[in-house]
Length: 347
Image (tube, rainbow, N blue to C red; front, side, top):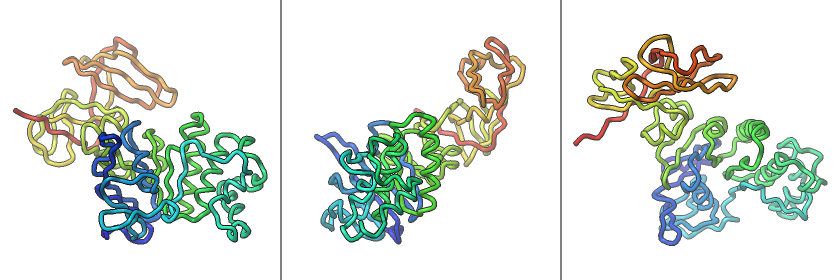
């Protein structure tokens, strides 16, 4: 048993799955601490939903193991545990509510007969702020309310782990922001071990205690949102997580000389590197080293698209109305803390 597979922890080791000979999961390792939420973040087609379905028992992996609360659900020395015996709740992308059942009927669907008489469905509806909605038909609810019903249905069985597969993707932007905040607080209050799948970085950072970045069928990095943003493990992760300026530099003695000056580095690197500079870590002042190519104004902030004298394009974010206009000549200075660099391949 994996060392971390205790209490309600979820552990995935070496999980592999292929369809028609094409690999979808390629040795996936994932750790979800008991009572915590890990946001599984990646682009469409990277294997996120397949991983969730393997954890839930809806797909048979070709190799690897899944452990939940110290119990092996699948693996080379263990028979495959059926989905209904895993005590795993799942919230699907479209809610998947039964239109012919009432709201209460949908929530109580997974309960045993004696449990349905105990008020469990009503408790679950109250948990998601839908007390008194039990007699309503799903079609009479808004999209956000329907997803709350789906969440109540997943929680009513008191699962050991909860899996959420992009549950807000069908909601409009404002409702999505509201619902994700409510769900984040609810999951924290309930204390259930959860995996939350999304392709939206902002959503992952809000909901997840940790974020696992999935690219090409593998988990390439798992860490807290702040650590992921500050120190992405690879160029690919850096580019996937928000705006990333990668400028050439030469590293020595804990710093790098770059086109925008000397930049402190995390870790000891020597030689030619690409240095990660986030747009908000740069300052723009009047000067001659770069030219403003365009300005993107968002109200709460603005982004300058600048062109360095050497030709490199650099994005700079300012938390104010833009002071400069396209065509203005400026200087760029690094004002952030130690950042990461990536050694360039030689030879």
